[in-house]
Length: 280
Image (cartoon, rainbow, N blue to C red):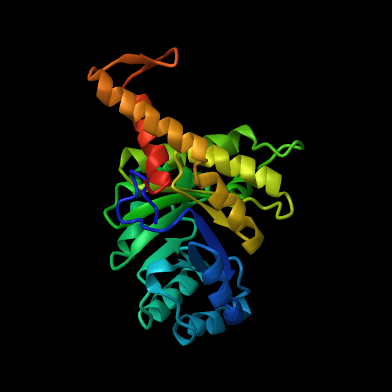
């Protein structure tokens, strides 16, 4: 269970796995392998397969406490038509947590008042509106998306040749994390698209943990273990955190020295976060 301090209403674990909603034979396997499954009605499903994908939501049930449904963007044009059809299909299911693709305004969240919403900020407008979106009462988490963001800017890639995010993507990532934190909501880190590169995924997941993201989304089952490992503190980290908190209790003062370092309130909260992730 997620014990992130800002994850009120977000009890999902750290590894969230996308699964195309038009592939019902994969639903159970995805749910077994990840902490929660995201049944995707948006980008992973071709327009001519969306109707069947919606039917699958009711015909192939999963645990609603561990299931998220990504709906199409709310807006004009064909996307808005798909969004309305998605909501109609959801009414016939027990699922009450949705991921709103290309979230860009609080008004869109108002259309989903019956649901807990993970708002996927993945356009320039969405990133700029992240604080207002996070303030909505039915927002349980914010997630960011790199490739759609860069596409919305007319760019061609979110990463440089060395695999590191470009400055604009890092800015968006930080903006969503800060907006979520400012309103006491959880933040979900973007997917890592280079599926075979588990080393790169592990490094990015470790950074997500250290930065304060409550979870990271995956696009392939092979990625789940790397994400879980990053969120699971080592035995040494847990022992060090226990030692530090014990030293703080013994010191009985606001600021003290431990192993040659100055320790104050924020450092103690870091140690508490380690124990929460360890389930201690």
